[in-house]
Amino acid sequence: MKAIDLNLSTIKDGAIQEQFELEMAKVLENLHDLNTEPQKKRQVTITLDFATDDNREVIGMVHQVKSKLAPQNPVGTMLLTGRDVETGRIEARELKSGTPNQGYIDMETGEVLDDAGRPVETKVIDLQNRA
View 1 (cartoon, rainbow, N blue to C red):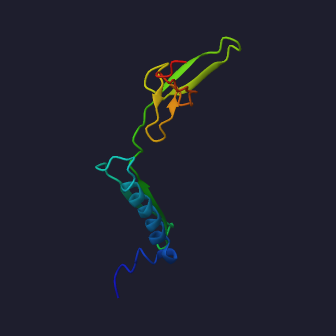
View 2 (tube, rainbow, N blue to C red):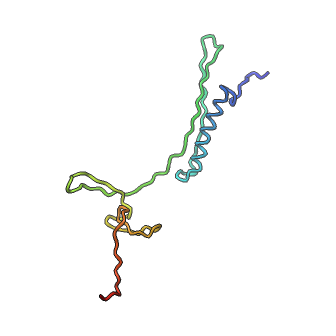
View 3 (cartoon, one colour):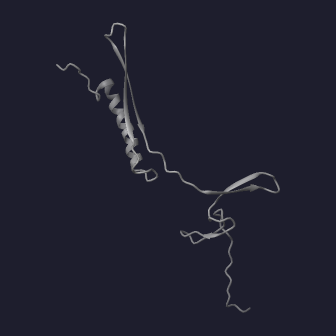
């Protein structure tokens, strides 16, 4: 018989193993997330805390399994803000064109958009029409 007969995967009906697998799944998901730094270390920690009774015969053990993941990469954008002259209310919107009051063409749709990404009404002018 072993002097210490404890198996982490069977203690408390496999609770430690089950929690480890849940945290490991989070780590693996985070490792494959393209919005995180690939080289950043991830971590799974299993903590076992022990406390004994006065006679030192019965030991209470509490376990915790937790993961430390890589944070999402920061994503920046520019905002346009100002006060509405009629209502006095402060307004803000994302600047999508890169330059205030500059329109742009959506490369996926070919649509002409204003600096906030809203469609702009366009007219086609026939320069060869002499009428």
